[in-house]
Image 1 (cartoon, rainbow, N blue to C red):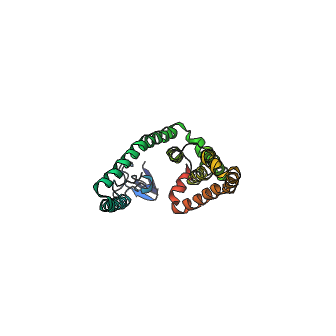
Image 2: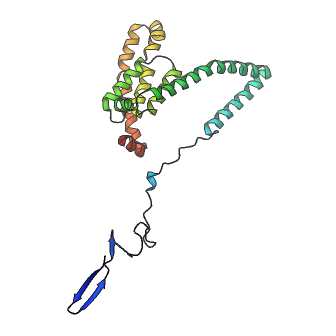
Image 3: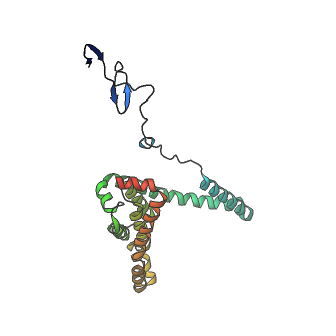
Length: 233
């Protein structure tokens, strides 16, 4: 667009400069291309997905356990000879063979539960904004959860994957450990008696809620960015 400014008998044709966000651009240049002196701002680095943490196949825990096994095997060999070491090794391999199917079944159970459970309902009932009700639901769920560790821990991992927060999951695990009815009915009542079992359960009732509340308190302060992201979701 060209305009003319006339002063009495003299007319001067001029082209007004194009101003965009405080930067004057040459009208002959296309507006879609940024000026070399004023490059476009780069995207925020935080918006880019960060690569997940890669777990090392051999960590300090593996090295320490391997060292303890080697020392124990050396002590057994020194005391009982090769036959003692082979006997223990055979027994441990037999025990591992019996546990392995349960471990695989527990992992499959956790994977299926994480796919079946509705994420929105779990996040609303057991998420960071569930408050005291989420801790109570986690406590009740842990108290009635049947099975052993091959069931409880895969379920807890699945709940974390579908939207439950640390507090509710901690309350569930602590409740399963202290109040779980399976061990109480099968072992504690026959051995320790009904009175002892009932009083122990009553005294243990507030502990899962307190542990879950403390877990939320610590999680928000140790992992503030993750907690803020959970609140946004």
